[in-house]
Image 1 (cartoon, rainbow, N blue to C red):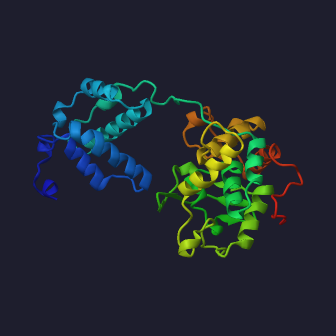
Image 2 (cartoon, rainbow, N blue to C red):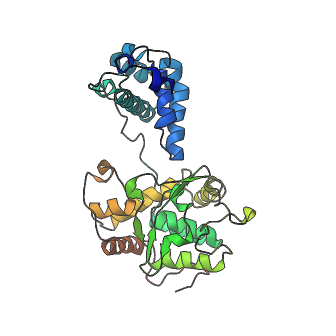
Image 3 (cartoon, rainbow, N blue to C red):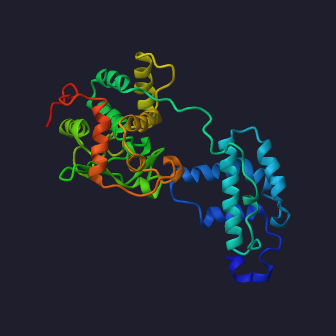
Amino acid sequence: MRVEFNEHPLQRCSGRTFGDVIAKYENEELPTRHSTRRGYLHIDRLYLLPKWGEVPLSQMRAAEVRSWILGLDLSAKTKGNIHNHMRLLFKFAMLWEWYPAQINPMSLFKIPGAKKRLRKPNIITPAQFREILEAQSDPVVKAMLVGAYCLGLRVSELFALKWQDFDESKKRLIIQRAIVEGHVGGVKTERSEAELPVTGVVKSTFAALRSVTPFNAEENWVFARQSNRGKKPINSNRIQQNVLRPAGEAIGLEFNLGWHTLRHSYKVLLETAGVDISTQRDLMRHSDVHTTLQIYGSVALERMRQANQRALDLVFDADYQPAGMNIE
């Protein structure tokens, strides 16, 4: 408030430090999504403030920042995240007229390998998924596995599902929210908030779960936690540690089975089924065109439903129903 009332526009750049930019950004512009906020705050506290917090904006040099980032003992991806955040901070500094409106100094260089995947993602085959699924007796776990592997849901979306998200008349699921570390918020990107087809085994598995769970009202969590009377969803990390990893070890996987492995496996499943790239993009709900080979355009839900069914046909026989779930 003192800045707004007392500072003359021509003096705004004078004496401002990079730490001032961080403080104003965190106070006024920080995104509301929990995981994004946490990531930015982590970068600010651990890296930017200790190194650049007291440095005047007028003395920030792109070459010096580049040398510093490249010299950090971090992965290329993390270095890229720091670089991108600094570019965002400089953009707002120019918006506030704390820094001359010019080419963003952080855009003068790139971080090598920042967008390159360090290792090939782990996947499981349809046969391995069937083996894992059949070994489970809990209908809750079965529905989790089917949602992750047969719809490719992110773990934050999977555990944030409510029964009201299912539209039985149109055989679809509408992704509307995500949950990260117990914080319920928006989905990762605008394209993430989309509809997905629900047919076949996916439909019958979730219908079977709803028929046996005491928390089956529209407003209830699909994977409601029994210990608190369904007020919160089950902890996904606990399921990964106590169920997924032992299940992967039981079938001889040489890596730790996690939720994202199931999502990656669904992408490969779509490719194996011959699904075109634009439909893959819509089923995976990617927003970055590079993620789906720079293909644009949307496809109808019916086309997505057919593609999803072709993928599931690689996993399940036409008359297959999970054990104890023979519900039409």
